[in-house]
Length: 110
Image 1: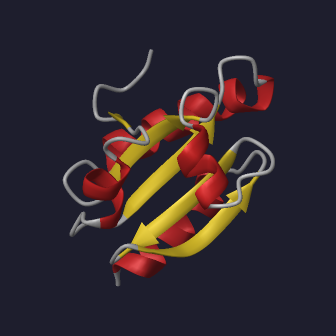
Image 2: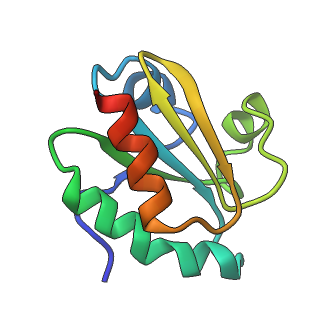
C-alpha cells in the first residue's frame, strides 16, 4: 500500500516542491511500466513514513514529466535524486537498499 506521505512531483510543481523546499527532498524518478521501479516502491513508502516531517519524499513519473527528467539527465529508471538547499547532493541509479538510502539521508541531515 502506498504511503500517503509521498508527494506527487510534476514539471509544474518541481520548483516549489523540490528546489524551494527548506527540507531535504528525495525524488524517485519512475514509470508505471518499470518493474525495478515497482520493486523499489515499498522502500520509498517506508522512507516517506519514517522521515515524515524531516524529509520530503516524492515521486515523479518520467512518462508524464519529460522536462524535469531531461533537465536532470535521467537516462534510466529508477533514479533517485536527493536534494538539499535546492541542489542535488546524491544520485542513485537502479534498485537501492533501504539501509543504503537511510545512511545517505541521515548523513545529509547532520
